Length: 246
Image (tube, rainbow, N blue to C red; front, top):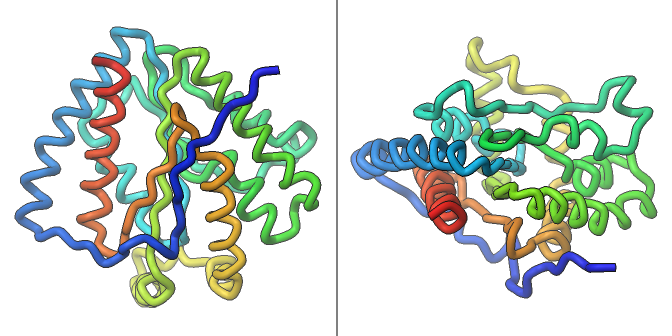
């Protein structure tokens, strides 16, 4: 049986330079150009009947929602769908954990965006004990095979981890707590997860090592500065789509 190979590069959160910044003027200039390029490339993906899947993982309050909003701002709304992945429903829990993701993969020429994803099996389900060790241990191979089938179908897969440090996360939590318009974003679960930071970091680093593949690569994004993170994600998207489509 063919085995889907991972890459040999090293991806580790502890080695990431988190404090890279971008000035507001640089940010505005770059974003205008990048959004226009992404709009044109998504039309090209449509013309070539190539599905595109963007996967977003990362720490709570790392800015995934803000990045996704900027990524999709100039896209034709008929061509993309954002899936906010939460705990499985009563129906979904009766199936294999990948079942609900198969039901959300994009059709030819369309874009799917996972805000949280199938990697929950080796992240939150592993750390919180929702999956047994045998379940999450075998999930790496299951996920690789799942993504290999998507790639064989023609899907372009790009996976992002938005990384902030613990101190920056605390500042963002406090800001949400004190803002009536953002308070709903902060839950008791977010605070509990902070207490397991080291466990989540260990799980994430192992996930990168086992599931970073040439056609479904991980990109670690320093996100202490939101401007820098947004530009890095959009630049990466442009580069990957150009590689695959042009």
